[in-house]
Length: 145
Image 1: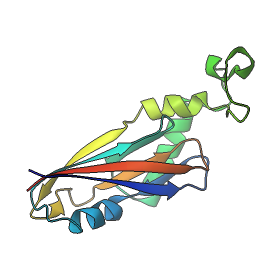
Image 2: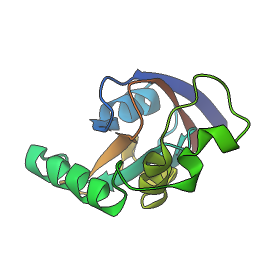
Image 3: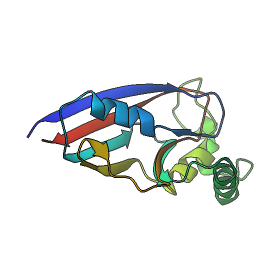
């Protein structure tokens, strides 16, 4: 069975933002001959995350507020003591972003059936930027026949 890989880039604009990447995944799938199998979607950053959930504006705002309550930017974090760490000059103060990312996941595996993602009616694949704005990469890997 073939394995097909692809990297996509997302240019994020906000400090915390949620991007629906479902259509990009489906477009990649459509460009292949794979009809049945699985696709791995993997975020390659420690301050980003992925989730499958509903892409509804008010829910997305609720999620952002929830994550900010779990790891408020204004809280005291040891990771933010940059003077005690060996870091590049442009190192951001972002412990809260790492902690938010840990509440989600870095990857999702989605079944492929008859050339389509086997997502439920209201499910979308959501990419979470938690320390933007930045240029981010997401890795896709399709396995199937």
